Amino acid sequence: MNFVTNILHILGSGATAYILANRLRDRATRANTLAGFQLAESGAVPFLTKLSERAATEGDTWLAEKLAIHAADEKRHGQIFAYGLKQMGKQVMDAEELKQQRESELEQKPSPFFANYYRNYTPEDLKAENIDWLAFMGSTYILELDASKDFVRMANALPEDEPQSHKLKQSILSVAQDETRHAAYLYEALHRRLTASKVEEIVEDWRKRKVDSMFAMVGDMISNGGNSRSLVKDGTPAKGKEKISELVKA
Image (cartoon, rainbow, N blue to C red; front, side):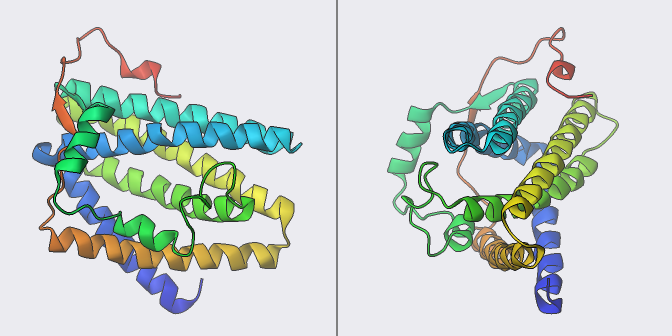
């Protein structure tokens, strides 16, 4: 990573981490933040499952296995965030409610983050059956690597003196460990196909894209005053006998 990109990465990561940590620490915004994570993690499962099947069809059993494990991890992460919401007596809106909410908004804008990150790629290009393997590996490696660090920062922002916050902190730290492992296999996958210099070239390109995307996202947050549409509704509070430990890897 060149010097300028590195400095911008540090600044952008710091700003993003500060915003997300504060949203998670503040109980007024915690539920919506957890809902966003639940939707993102659970939403990746079908994509990763299809990629695993595609890799198996193409004869890459190593990658197929790694992707299947990745999909299972993301499913569990979604359940962890759902449990965190349940502890607050909340749950994610169902698909139809979210769809109706989007349709009711006067102005529907694509995510500034992903619009920048995947610039020059069409939605068709990014489908599991079409995406270039190197583009998938490079882009997802950066996202997983950074997510592992972001989750640690967010977990550490939670107060230790609240039982619910303590449980949530331990759960999020377990998610961070999984993200680190995901980044490792994706980096190895790149090296299985390319020379070391070519791998670093691809990583550098996606790092620059990530830097641009972070600043676009932070700018959008600031322009919106930090407000975002609600993703949650009232649900059934978790019962005392329910244990998050069943979802958290040791």
